[in-house]
Amino acid sequence: MNFKEELREFAQRNKMKSKGPLCVALVVTRHAKKLGLPLKADELLTDAGGQVMGLGKSAVQTILNEHGIDRVLAEEGGRTSRGNVGNMRKYAAFLNELHSQGPVDLDAVENWWIERVKEYFAGKPFILRFDASKSLRAVIRDLLEQAERRQAQSPGATFVGTMLQHLVGAKLNLLLDLAIEHHGASVADESSGREGDFLVEDVAIHVTTSPSEALLRKCKRNLDNGLKPVIITMHRGAVVAEGLADQAGFGERLDIFEAEQFLAGNLYELGKFGQSGRRTTAEQLVDAYNQIIDECETDPSLRIEVSR
Image (tube, rainbow, N blue to C red; front, top):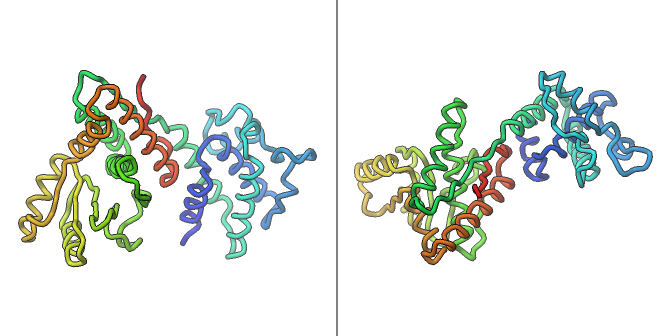
């Protein structure tokens, strides 16, 4: 595992994504560059012991300015954020552990955190516009179209697939009493040994925007292992998946659902088909989705807000 992967896991595990923790990471990294590793956490506290030494707007903005960023990350530089001393201790211990494994490129580490700051500034959430005059499919389609537009502006990004996977995961959380295991959208099934994106009882659920022959081979392995494969995909993807499954000779053994219908149908059912129930359930879906984003992804711009 390289240092970027270790940083990503550390940031996810300790929720180092908001402005306060980001300020702590930048300042502590700069202390490490000046003092060297390993760090002594107690020496990074102010005399009163209640704040991180040097943690303030001026110090943070100096670091950002060196990287060509003039926007203010936090007016108090994270000083007033709860838990900043705890975050400092965790991060200092993390850097010390990296150091114990070999030389640490602290310039590269600082650059990694700068990229997280840029993501934070770019992190305008998606908006779920709940309009009672529109179908639930149209409401969900609007969300996915927002992701498509953002993805078109960011070559290489996978906003649509990530949103779709975690919306399905959020729906499963609401629907089932079982503990559903969630993963970052970039974590491949093969590398993690998973049978699909979600495994519920004997059902292996695959969420994708673009069904492929590789996915159908995975579904065939599911069948061989006694599992029931299900594909959830976009409208045009459903047509492709059906064709590939028929060509592979097991179309009648594979369930394929169009994502908008899959999600909308359950919002009706969970909301007991009432207007207020539908909105309440949609808000619960968004809350569950955002919790998954906070736990599994590093990009806060993937979050969704419900328009009022």
